[in-house]
Length: 384
Image (tube, rainbow, N blue to C red; front, side, top):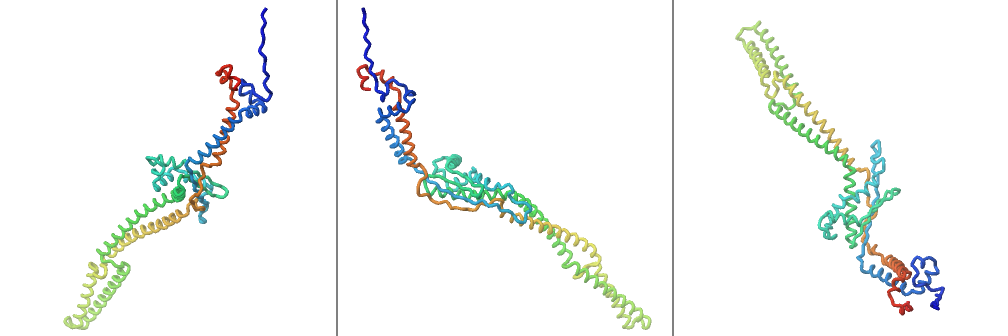
């Protein structure tokens, strides 16, 4: 007859955990979790100390970053003489923020401040990419204010970068708004240069005509020449009348007849001389040709001069319009040199280390120990 004796079953305390309970069962009720924490409180305390210490150590060893900000007031510059506003859709503020974060502005900042060596990069593209990681731009549409924030390891360099971004961004913003006006102005300036060349050529042709034909003031010269010719014709007629009268009452050899003949001959010679070569006066035979050529040259000069004057006025109007861009960014707050770093925050790292230590400690507190218990001999299980 065989007798089997069961080993006595030891009852565990209600407040203690069974050694083989899985982790999900341990977390099932608050009582079991609290019991596990009371049983292995030193593990949780050690994890909290390590987590907080790691946060403090990270806050001490990590490189501090400083921030510098600059803000702009974007003002719509409408022309009061224009029938419609320059920016009816109110795109000046979003456009300016996009300009500040654009690659063009970043490249110019890198080139101006020579940031490749400061950022530890070998080419401008990598330096620009690294720089754009540390800038942020935002805007408030209600107040039309755009703000640029720059982070850097050196406070003075952060201020210089923010200032360079502001100056270059405002310059590019003005160029973009005046691009349309600038293109129109350049085309008008090209036409103005062309008409100026034509005007100079026409004036040179007029000068050559005056030197060749001895013309100073053609209307006055024509008037004087005609008056002189009329006087000579009248003098010749009077001389002929006097000659005819003297020949009727005196002999052919009388002094009166001879004087009348000389007067008539002199008037005829002077009149004939005026018909071919005018000297100081104009030749009467050339007057129609001179008047026609002079009128053509003068009309040509007047045409080119009028076109040139119109183009000059249009160019000046466009130049004035270029000084009134649709959205002008005025500096609101100058960038300043930061005295305290913005990151890393030692308080934030301490809090993060605390929670990380808490989670890790709870994990080890409730970790199932079945595999660990099985690895020990039977006589050493009581130590657990």
